[in-house]
Length: 73
Image (cartoon, rainbow, N blue to C red):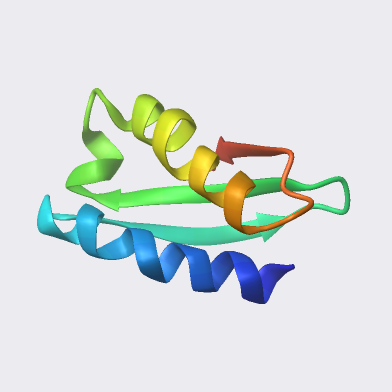
């Protein structure tokens, strides 16, 4: 599952990098929780929680079976 998540994040990364940020995969738990760290401009952005939940989480759930939730780390 980790490889599929990394592949999906590669698709998302250009959008984040265009705004001066990035995303880093920290951990994938056995129960499908993906722990991510937003870095750069995204790490300090007031909209980072919305980006994480409404953007990244939705994409990962669509592309990677077994992803239940995305949480910040």
